[in-house]
Image 1: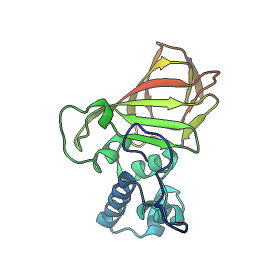
Image 2: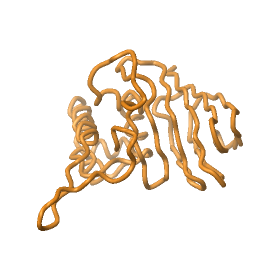
Image 3: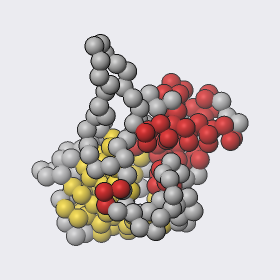
Image 4: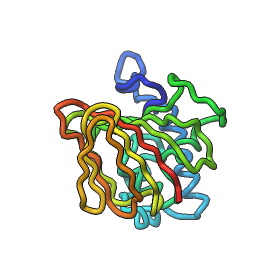
Length: 207
């Protein structure tokens, strides 16, 4: 996870031999928050693995900030904990200022799927609506097997490029300026057919 707009690997430590990478600060705070949420419920890693469908090893590594969880993994954990992704990420950010400057908006990257997510709305644990910017490279796609909150309302507005959104097994092809509104109850998939990348705004409202 990257806290600012700079995309790319976190620099490793220097020295005469290979040094262990220092966890990204946001990854470290996210891991601590995930561990805290599990502890609040008194669940073991095994219990959480059964509830979420995520392996114990992946959960353990995410909580220790040894790896940055993918969007699909975070989505499953948000579903279990009853949070949207923006709510979860807001809980690891300090303060609740009413204005969030562009340079301070947290950027999170799922390198495995070619997906970049920018949290545009100022963080607040009690937020009900939120605004997110999404980017997908040409040919990339990201699938969610369930919504973080059943009945979540989404408005998907394509700012540049083309985007295909599949919900309830119905594909929707969107071009620049097009907007799709839906309530999410089951699996969804976002895919950039290309040839150019796509950038879109996602407005989310909790039921």
